[in-house]
Image (tube, rainbow, N blue to C red; front, top):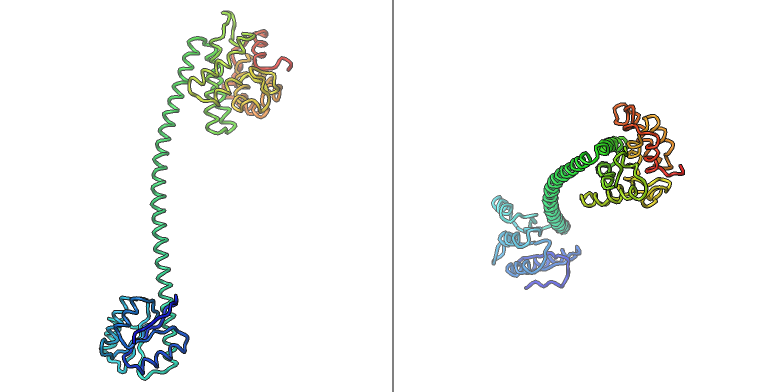
Amino acid sequence: MNPTIQDSAAPCVLIVDDDPHVLHALETTALSAGHRVVATEDPLAGLQCLRDHSVSVIIADQRMDAMSGLELLDHAKRLQPHASRILITGMLSVKMLTEAVNDGEIYRFIAKPWSTPELINTVHNAVQRYHLLRENAALQAETLRLNEELLTEKRGLESRLAQAASDKTELERLLVSLRASRDGMFHFCEAVLTAFDGTLAIRTRRTVEICRQLAEAASLPADLHDNLVAAAWFHDLGLLAVPRDPDQQTPHETSGADLRDHPALSERLVLTAGLGEVVARAVRAHHESFDGGGFPDRLRGRQIPELARWLTPVAYFVSCGLSRQRALEELDRLSGVAFDPHVVPFLLRIALHPSSPGGSALVAAPLAAGHQAMVRRAYVPARS
């Protein structure tokens, strides 16, 4: 009898026994327990069933003419390794037990004659074992897949980290090169100022130093710190192009359009030097007043670039020619008028520190009252 299986996703119980009476009894018992059953007297037909269909349990009689039950179950092990294999036999010798364990990996033995409840319970447990083995295999396959994905992700992450480390190293190298280039540019700026106006060079160096201390005292971000120093070096460079009488003590004594042109001249020099728009805008705005009375664009309050709001009170402090005490009083009085009230307290703290450049007896070289007034007008609105 050839086995037939109706279409179904559920695996069946395969029974192979060449004794039709025993086969019928086994089939009836398995069906009564609610299992899908395929029964055949031909071991070769049983093997073909294993090739074509999913089977949960294989029950085979040991004594068959075409093939022994152990031989059939040994083939079944290779065709469907998760199926539970049950051997029916009328005699259990030590040799048979050894062969069954070593060759067929038998799940259970059923002795003739069998107990129907015992047979039903054995088949039920064998089906459960099959499902557990399938689930375990699926979990192992999924675990293996996830492990492979994790390994792939790990390798990808290691590659990205290595690339990031390489990029970081290259960036650090570029930053060192850029910083060296900027420092070289600042040295050139200082040399030009010294060659054309020694007094202006001294004031610029002092402005740079106080800006550095101010940035540290206010814990400014690194980019703002660096840009503030760059703006301090370049803010008055445009004054070298402003016509001046030989007897003037400071370029800020120049009045009118010539003085008002120098922030724009300094701005163009910053852009030519490649220091960027942020520094250029700060240099252009370093004569803007917090209340809107400055030049060249009459900006007020937060309209004034942040960098310029840090630079302007320092530039005035260095250039005003007042004694330290008078300069501090002026800074305090003009806070919120000419200068950003957020910046002034930090500058006062720097100027009062004994080791700061502003801690000397005079902020800069003293100027006569008339000259002080001219410098003051360059930074402070006339109405204040």
